[in-house]
Length: 203
Image (cartoon, rainbow, N blue to C red; front, side, top):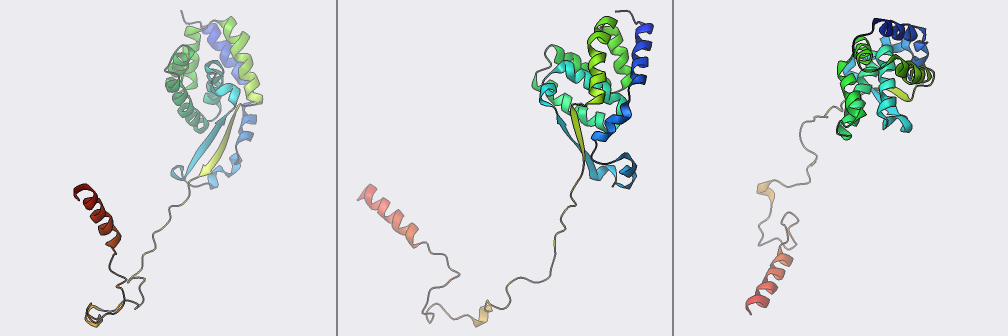
């Protein structure tokens, strides 16, 4: 399909009208506090997708469009989810189209791809209407999590046995020792079982 510049301009104009700042309210952490959070290696986004959307490739394309314009970190988290879903459905039918859009990874490139593959009537009649609806009530919830600090191994000198064991030169010989040796494992039951088995087989 030939690239339609008018169609492309209309899409951008519609997205400029959206109040995308409202979507940030779904975050558990206000934008003003992000600067106080630990570095990227210590935080991650936890994503949950509404049940009626997660298995619908058409709806996921609309969410993809929306998130690619809103927040890069949310979008990156959503791309991981989409990749897993596309693989789950073996890239069949509309899942293949969703996968192709997700690989572009940028709003402008996604729009170019849509202009080349979809008609204006289909886009504005169906897709853009749902994008506007999702911008007011996003089907995805993002919760900013912080990785727990790794537990430090407590190292200490010596051992836990505080003098209860006798030194080798202090131990009595087994001849003069009247009780059972607690440090010696008892194999008697094993020997009895093995002896009984041998007598049964060869007796």
